[in-house]
Every structure is written in C-alpha cells, then in structure tokens.
Image (cartoon, rainbow, N blue to C red; front, side, top):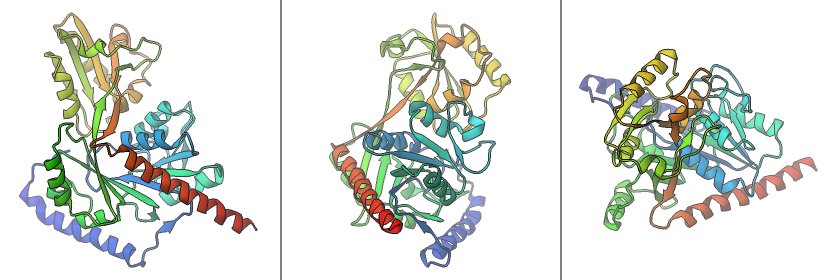
Amino acid sequence: MTHNRNIFLYPISLIYGLITSFRNFLYDSGILKSKEFNIPVICVGNIAVGGTGKTPHTEYLVELLKQNFKVATLSRGYKRKTHGFRIASSSSTVNDVGDEPLQIFRKYPDLLVTVDTKRVSGVKSILIEHPDTEVIILDDAFQHRSITPGFSILLSDFNRPILSDHMLPYGNLRESMDNMRRADVILITKTPDDLSAIQRRLIVKEWNKADYQNLYFTSISYQTPVPVFNDLQILSNSGISGFDDCGIVLITGIANPLPLKEFLSKDHKEIIHLEFPDHHNYDEKDLLNISAAFGNLKSIKRFLITTEKDSVRFKEFTNIAEPIKSAFYYIPIGISFLNEDKEEFDNLITDYVRKNYRNYRVSESQGDS
C-alpha cells in the first residue's frame, strides 16, 4: 500500500501518533492491563499497513512446529461476516473465517485454525475447547496490547522500510518506530536474493536493534502453479515459465502485487493485470471482466493466474465454466532465509516453545494438585 504523501495529512498523522503513543504508555505503565498466558504464544505482525508476508511466515512457523507440537493459529478473520470465536472446518467459507485463515486451513486441514477479534478471549476459548494445544501462533497481533505474547516477530518489507516511513494517514505506520522494542525477532521480508554482505551490515546498523533482538532477512519464492479447482492437473514448473508465447491474465487482490507481476514478466510478454483492493470480495461483475480479459489475450496458450489468498475466494464460485476453469491457477508463496540463518531462527523458535511448553505443563500440574 502506498500513499501520495499529501502534506495536508501530516497534522492528522501527528495527532494519530500522539493517540497511539498515549495508548502504548498506558499499557507500558500497567494502567491498562495486558494478559499473559503460560502456554507458548508467538505473535507475527508488523507496525505498517500493507503486505509484509505475514501469512507465508505464519505458515513457515506452522511447518516448523507441527511435527512436534499441537499448533493452533489465531487471527481476527479480517472482513468475515461472523462474530466472536470461530474454528475453521471443511465447510467454512470466506465469510465465516476470512480469506487468510481459510487459506491456512486448506493447506493444513489437521491444524486448529481459529479466529476471534479479541485475542485474549480467543486464546481462552482455544484452551477450553482444545486443552491439548501446545503452542498458539497469533497472526497480525502486534498492536493488540491486551495480550502479551511470549515471543514476538516483527516483519518489515525490504522495499518499504518502516525506518523511513511516517504515521498514518500521511504514511503507513500504525504506531511509532519506538515500539519495535517489543519484538524479539525482526524479519526483513521480500529481500533480494543477491543482497551483498556489505548491504546487509548497513541495514542491520541502520535498524539499531537492541542486544536482545535478532534480525534476519527472508526472501519469497514463487512455487509450482496449482489449479484453483482441485480436480484439475497440476502444472509442471515448465507449465507457466516455459512458454514464452503464453498469455496471462493476472488477477490480484493483495496489498502489493508488484513482485508477482515482475516475476511473471520475466518470461511472459503478454500480461493483462486486473488489480483489485486487498481482501477484495469478488462478484459476478468481476468474473465478467476477468472473462473479457481472457478473451482479449492474443497468445495461443492462455492462463489466468491469481494469488493463493485470492484463490480461496474464487473456489466458492460454482458457475465458472470452460475454458476459464481449466486455465485458472494460483501460485503459492514460500519463504527462505538468507545467509544461512534458517537453522539459527528455527532453533530460536523451537527452543522457546519447548522450554515454555514444559513450564506450562509443570505449572498446570501444580495447579491441579
């Protein structure tokens, strides 16, 4: 998400900054109470609006922990039509739990995926309904001061560094940079793979992180295209990138579609990009525009490409016909750590969960006795 830096918005940003600073002061001083749980709770979030890759990083944590621990995820379920605490199931829709939680559930159907606007209430509901839960991952909860996570991960987009940003609405910041001190780990996301050692040192120095904080760099990787409708054949890697004469309609409803468009542009000269707002709720009119764009492609081989988050919305349409249906694919996103930091980060997370889960069980048994 970008702003035009309208100077008339700057005074409003100053007022907004004062309000958020006062709110944080109330929590920091203990005037407003923040709930802390004995069970391991990991927060993944940012202090800027727009896409920093929270969902793929949440999925990375799920992959890391699910083999050894009973993992639950908790998010607010942005733009869902329901209220209160909800658990994703095979019958859940975007309106029930939101697009990103539904994306996670469909990728990990055995995972406990939950939503609740009130994070404290959500954690309590998880522990009541699923007392065997061993670790909870909070998605996009860095500003939810009513809960104190045991471990916080702050994300910042390499291409939109929060160090040079401003408060809303003049800029993109939800709160001031001073609050990065609450993070245990800072992840610079969407980093170029060819970042040099000198560039890395300069960025680390610029962040001026505290001694207790670890800073790592991650990059995104676009994976094998997958059909939006599961009864179709998955393309090989050459199915998309191997055809220089392939035409593509790119459909995005995410905060920053530019990296995906640039990735596809490397191998495809004909791309029609239909860009929608983040978390866009597609309707029949949008489908007509998508079909028209597909028909306007001049290439013999034609595909429609969307993001994994958008695909969960398109799956709910039952009236998408051929040839659109069989040409509709999404590209999953994975993340990787630069500079061989993966092992250090993984150990940091698993050690935190293992130690605090053990303490949780000890305190739980003492409470029972």
